Amino acid sequence: MPDNHLNLKARLHEIIFEADTAAGKAFDIVLLVLIVLSVGAVMLESVASVRQQFGPWLRTFEWTVTILFTVEYVLRLTCVGRPLKYARSFFGIVDLLAVLPTYLSLVIPGAQSFMVIRALRLLRVFRVLKLAHFVGEASELTAALRASARKIIVFLGAVLTLVVIVGSLMYVIEGEAHGFANIPVSIYWAIVTMTTVGYGDIAPQTPLGKILASAIMIMGYGIIAVPTGIVSVELAGVPRGKKVSTQACPGCGGEGHDGDAIHCKYCGSRL
Image 1 (cartoon, rainbow, N blue to C red):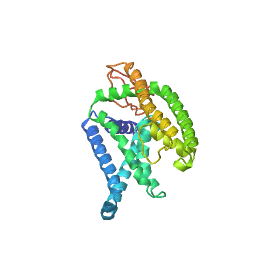
Image 2: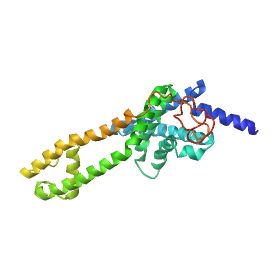
Image 3: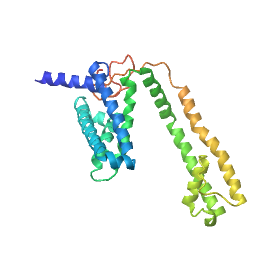
Image 4: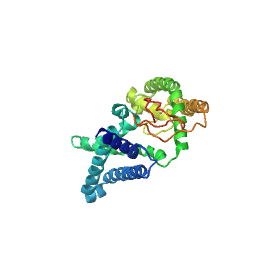
């Protein structure tokens, strides 16, 4: 009996987490199709004319998909050796968030719109279609972003300080008469202007305000370039050419292992 249980668990893991077998690939493709259809259903339901005519059918489909995804999530937790570790992983959290909105809609009307989070599950398409080189590129980009995170945080802190100062100055210079009703509104204007969005709902009227606004607009182009440069430098330093496996760990469900890896780099389980 224990052997049968282990065999069933291993078989489930092979089908749900792997795409090396025909059954595993078929399962993943059906899953991806359901994700696309469910996200499309949520979008269609937001259209009033479609909702009036097909609302009950769309909701029935959403609940059907949600129940299937719930069963799938439970099976994922069941067939890994460390279910809590998988539940706390990126895809584990995404899988949970994929089913929660429908249940929340029972107590919070409109919460089902958050089901578009399911689109994040489409990231598995690289593993399903055996696009291992894309997985490697994604790992390199992730490593570069992680390495540059502190520098970007410091940079964003400096930008936030700057917009607070500029917003306060514009409130003093322009005042309520020209639409800068308070400092928070003025900070909003500074952010919109510095990011070169420029909605135009608020605009300075005084010569001094226009000079300050011009300086902020020009500065905005330089500010946009800084994070790009930081990430580019870190990306250039990431080691290239490392082969990445599409295999998932049977212990924690972790992915992104080296092509020649024998054990999981997250939990140590044998691959």
